[in-house]
Length: 154
Image (cartoon, rainbow, N blue to C red; front, side):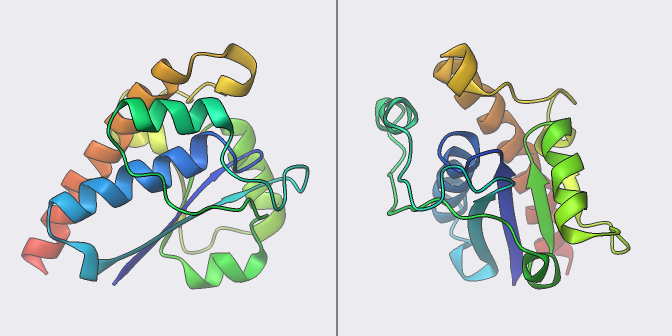
């Protein structure tokens, strides 16, 4: 089983969007039994809150099922539990390292590595939930292509 944790600042926009987009892709590929997928925040400011309504609307508009969600902060234990901890931008990676400590296992990565190499801009500030969706979707496609290949070869 491949365990993935998507991470952003508050866990109400980008990381739950990534969690739900990737979950939908995995389900459509018939690979659900091979993955555990979740999301978390680097901060505590949104702890307990649901997905931000404009993020929910964008997922609905794109036909992605919106799963039950409550924001939570990443922990050091998450580093041990998950195979990949995937941040949305460089600031997330800095905070993830602060929480997890040294990334001796190379688990902390950025979603853009699987697409265009760029940060995924925070739609909370830009109000561009469509662009965030497109960037997250592209990263998730690349991630699934890589991991799907690993599963087929493994």
